[in-house]
Image (tube, rainbow, N blue to C red; front, side, top):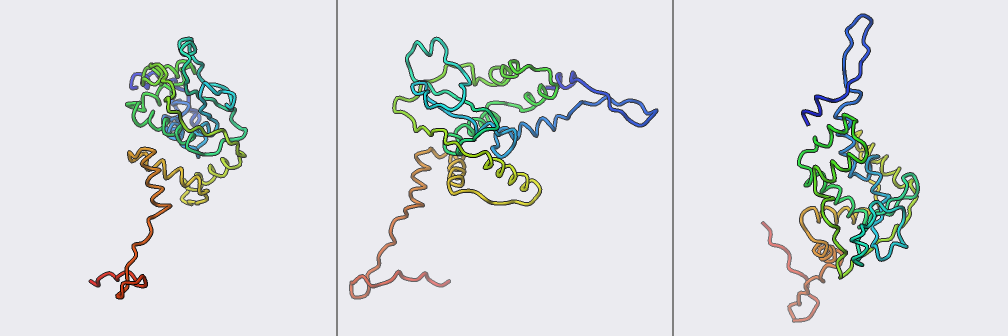
Length: 249
């Protein structure tokens, strides 16, 4: 990163007449860092792509929305196995409902920056320099800094997976969420979430704490359907008694 930083292209900044010209970068590393920090945030412009993804099994691509990102290899096609593929829609159109499938894509994005990339500066500086083609950048993140694309794609578990179809929603929902995020940045938090959104965020938090999806489901079931209160018999053995009050301290 230090070597690339030293070789970064510079531009001339105009100062007062007669003053020496100052060489500065056309934009700052912080500008790039700010963008990268929003790549996995659905409420940031850089994270809008999360709303346009669709995870589809190769055995049933007829229901896919958008275009496939990565084609099946000859080896994968010849195997006859079922693989999970990522389809992407054109940004600016309808977005998908934020559900578990969208949350899965977000978790994969978070894991890339939190676990796979050892130092985010190794991503920031090449982008800051601006001399990478799209293909070269994909190679950097996909193979040089991580092993995300260096392994064979695993087939879908034979037990199957729960699929969530691309439930198209009007893009005004995304615009509202971005407005809420901007207000939050300005110190004016505004809470306006649907119950489904809050449930999905709760699931994300539990899985971030290490709970499996099954454990999270069991926890939510216990919250939504608590066991009945214990019944206390009255003095006569009947059912008219009440629970004993707590001891005073």
